[in-house]
Length: 345
Ligand SMILES: Nc1nc2c(ncn2[C@@H]2O[C@H](COP(=O)(O)OP(=O)(O)OP(=O)(O)O)[C@@H](O)[C@H]2O)c(=O)[nH]1
Image (cartoon, rainbow, N blue to C red; front, side):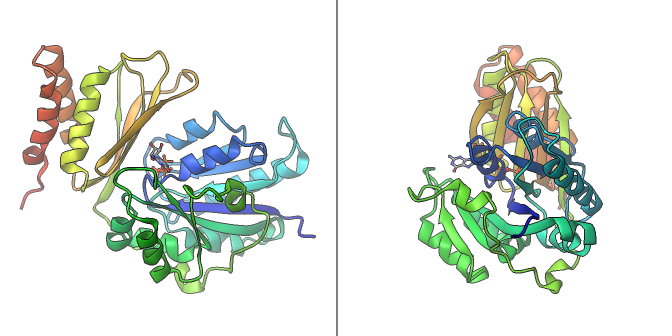
């Protein structure tokens, strides 16, 4: 019997639903004994703080994209989880699997190749599955326009389609055809399907994956115009004004704002809110189960938009609202941002 710790790599484009899928699994009886490694593209980790509420064994690999600078950090996090699995030091017993969530812009192939090259890890870890998450709202566009999204699907043995419940969702058959064109052998599952079981995807019971071919392990060619910045937020935000501003901003500029997320203290709740915007869509916010005392901030991953411009636009929107300029002021402010932010021709 193979005694090595199963590793499940979960990849997928920005905002496709990776953390949500993992979180749902680790909250089940079957998924509780999972060790997690989370890599985020931005400077500040949001997923990590969301997952830490559900699992004790979470390693954050922050401050950069996994496929470039952080491979040594993944190897170290993996070492830690293997030790935890073996010595049973974790309250509640040892770990039965490790799950690695890559950043939404990562090419998972170099990381997998790194793990395969480390003799100690090779002896202790078995790559059980590479799961790519594709969302039914932005997925087709991402597969068409984003090389990172295509690479993530190309290396996956399992592709999970999310967000089929949303009004703007594309039909599953169209998504499946786009996935098959890239990865003809991948198993394609839709979380809306009543036969869908999280354990079939994330439990790592069997090894599905063939090792990635060496050419996939070449250095990825990132879109150098994509950058990430963090806006620290002092005090409690005026929630109605903020949501109007953010919805209008995504509506007008979602083609350049690939992802926005954050943990915020607001006037509407005594617990921090996790907010998620994915391109043009703002998802409903969720509450952290308690205030963990961590900082309040917004993270943007965007193309051709500067931090100072967003900062100015938000500050003006909130000021206008405080000055009693009416609730449409924040939205007007966000929409007007197009002229402010348009890159010089
Ligand atoms: N309606 C709906 N919303 C979903 C589904 N899956 C995820 N979401 C929402 O989509 C938003 C982004 O989900 P995440 O799980 O944070 O996505 P992610 O891929 O981890 O994001 P990054 O780590 O930033 O790349 C959140 O608001 C989720 O609640 C789904 O199947 N249906």
